[in-house]
Length: 171
Image (cartoon, rainbow, N blue to C red; front, side, top):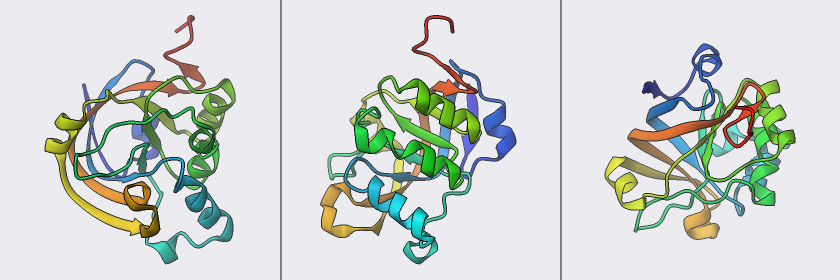
């Protein structure tokens, strides 16, 4: 098990390999299909800071935040998978979700020294490990708005790193 605290350094990400089990603590962002295009728009316009968003060394968990807790959604949905490259180029270091992602997305991660980790769908467990929540932007999207949550001990498996994927047969 590798223990990581946000924000992550370039070196910490460079040391991760496909199949590594990590325990993540610190503040992470949450977002899925409704809000990620809005975050990408902020990247394109250079307005992340106006929304109190700092992606340097950050994590994006593909989930909504509800009173019941958080749990991963499929990361290969069009709006989510299209966000990997721009978010990684803007400094995001880890995407958390579930499911296989495309070769093009894996290559985009490699080019930006970023990784994708899969996280089990255990909403009740994660609720106990979610210590604080705050709304960051787009409240009109309800539970799909952009949130930042403070976590302690979220466990995940590195599924894509350095051009390799856990879903490839040759890994």
